[in-house]
Image (tube, rainbow, N blue to C red):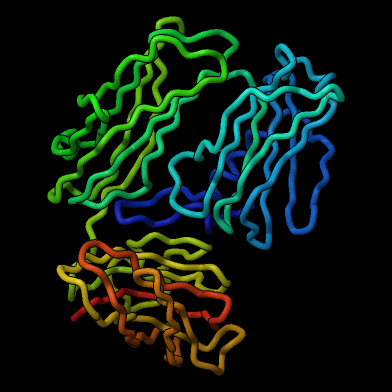
Length: 396
């Protein structure tokens, strides 16, 4: 469907990473068996679903073309003829959220046993938190024990984070002596040596044992992770192991990138930021700095976010190096973009450069608090877009 992988991978500071779109395609690939009848599209929200009795699963995938955010639900019917999904009048439903961002695994939004109604139906609640989210609903008993690490996708060297690890007993029997630990690893073990992990409040990398956990119950272990300022900017993996006396160990991991914020006066390469909304890395026009530039800023919602570290609160000048060639719906007009810093958004004018191979600079003033701040450059619904972004420079 997407032979050149556009939108399926994104360029993070530490390398390439899959996106929520990649995981949506992977969900399609998991839809084995046969397609089932659905409501197809309701307003701007569409759904497709499949069932596979041989694998004991049913999967539904849904998304909204207009960027809906808020509550939603999926109702499965005729479950009274799907004995492979029903146990003691219940089905096990897991909802995965796939935001449009670098994503090393889908986010477990909920995992629970739900009662089947007398008419053979069950309604699974879900929530779209972002305008470009996709949601997948799995009905399956094949993996009843679930562990979810709620770690950020990126962490900044010099900061600390509270990382909850949630274990859910989705089985039909009681778990005993549940013990959860968390570790941080890297391809080069020496890179992770300075990162410390401590359970809150007991300390150590293993939290206190939960003696009993009934079917359907969850327990949360909270870990405080400190990332020293000298931590190398590479990819790391948070690995959690939950030991169960009656089921054995259950291990799950979640990758995160350690990033270093851009310094004042330095060329902050746009392609090293977080790309979302369809923004992509390109190298097809000469004259760029770094590994390339951010392209695909041709539809509303496309954006790139970079992190800057500033020593004191104050007013700073942000310089955008860009190109704006003759193509697009606004070919004869100057382009515009929206810059958001410290929660304040403003429009910046990007005059035409005459060619996509010609680079120019545009500046805007931003006010930032001391510390690490996100600055986002976006094609919003009030902009003309259609520009390429090479790098950003923040100065005082």
